[in-house]
Length: 309
Ligand code: CP
Ligand code: NVA
Image (cartoon, rainbow, N blue to C red; front, side):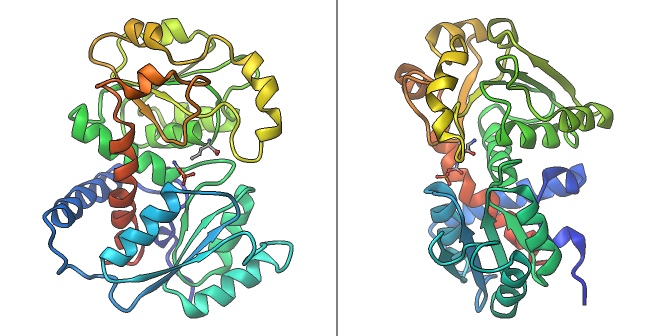
């Protein structure tokens, strides 16, 4: 029988605001329980998760595996040597085989179409652990972190500085659902996907700005956010990008322009001295490790929702 579409977690804007906020509330609730040391809530007891990684990972792998275990389940890591989707085996076959063993599939892939195909052919929920197009689990964790530190997500100003990449697309899709002010400051030619920008603008929920001027962009920000200039799959462009992205490093001067209330955020891994200085990432207003921690809690809530628990 076909699974309901909402069982998958592929893009933030597949959900309405109430559902997103409910997931974030649930994340905070289960986080408090886990932090208290209680190990009595085991909703994933007897369940297994297949985790497909076509790319490297620390946070995504450890947070999914640990979170699923702490709530009673068992997660299986499948690296590039185990599953070569589309090479050793067709994605639609991978989806149907894993669905016969596992209750949920999490995947980190290159082409976004791969996660869509996995979801289409699997009979269990599929969770997007990053594609070349987006990274919805990261931005759910970031939203949770903002609620904890800024106090709320609604009405805030988030200024992303750098490459218009998968992280930016997930911010734009969140902004299609929850109202805040999102600004992406990137070099010319490195803007986010135009269709995604238009989609977010058309939603009419948030103020969306795409600019090439980081200094102007950061004024009055609640959050200044950065990510690597060369994503996984683009590492051979790193040297060229370092030239083109001059002026887009988040340094103490840029944080000063942002103003005293601005937090610094980064999905990590970071290249210190490239997209962000060591001083900024180590400053008291940097909340990058809180973000990393919240990956696990946001994803626990996402998995609970995906499994209808
Ligand atoms: N932020 C993030 O997804 O980190 P990993 O690549 O280490 O999973
Ligand atoms: N944009 C980065 C995010 C890593 C978590 C990448 O895709 O490599």
